[in-house]
Length: 267
Ligand code: URA
Image (tube, rainbow, N blue to C red; front, side):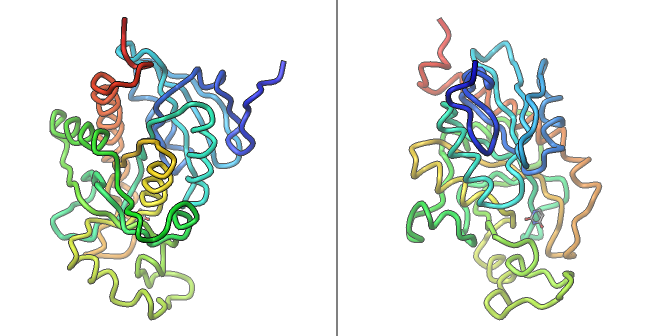
């Protein structure tokens, strides 16, 4: 028998994801296993294109949690959101990496995004540029509660989501080395405007979810300190990955036990 709502890009159907309502979304497919390991029980679901998936089970939650990579950048993240929404997923938590702009943010710290600068094109296909890229207050509160309860170093505020890793984030250590005039001086400008860090998916996630009536939040581990150097520190993710996974898992537990989603209520 074929699965009637099998989705073209992600290769998943509602029966395959066992009616999951929450998804944890790293960019990198390799990090699906890292997040799965934080849960008492999990099982891999396979991979289509950049979308690798697993289901995680927690006895405190009535439905499993889907863990699925988005690949890098806004277009593939928006495709993931659209197709998962068609399968009944309602709560989208990005669990990624980021480059710190502010000096008080260190390698391995977590950045919880309250809203994001829309330095990408995908979100404008869903809503005009005046529409804010704002995270779900409830889900963001759950992330903050989880990070505080676990004693994990974290920061919350505005992030900046760029369509490019090099010019849009004012990096010169690229093949071409040139940063077009449009982006020259922007690292300092974002710093002065209290933007915490750069990454590549938050604003598309927030706008697409908000426009579609879904909820989204984001927590990212700092893997580059842009006020010091342009390069990513390869050890930083290794240092932060357990904190990141534990905060994501606790945040879902916290959120699921408090919201009015009928599927999440026991009894
Ligand atoms: N991801 C980004 O987009 N930028 C960084 O500096 C680090 C991670």
